[in-house]
Image (cartoon, rainbow, N blue to C red; front, top):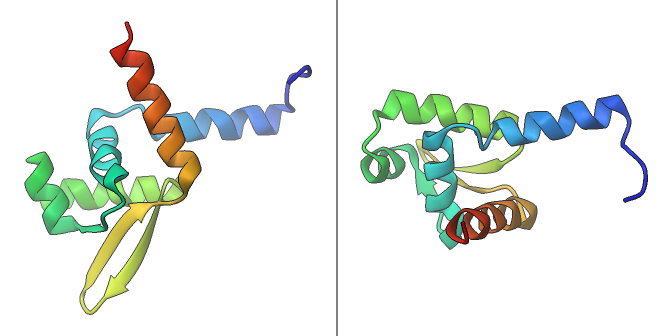
Length: 99
């Protein structure tokens, strides 16, 4: 990339990275790296965070287009939005592990 993106694009990129700026959100995203769909109850159990706090973080992650959801009966099942999210997470993990 030889040119600096437009201000609007820069703002969108900054918004994207806000999704990775909270340890609980990153924990949730990492749980979903396996490709397995998880519901709020599963995520709360695996993170040790209350269901209401998990629901709040899931809502934010979905608004940031980092997650997608699928309803099954009364439960919502969450997964990573796409392979771009998976790549960003994996690259972040590699970067931190190599320090």
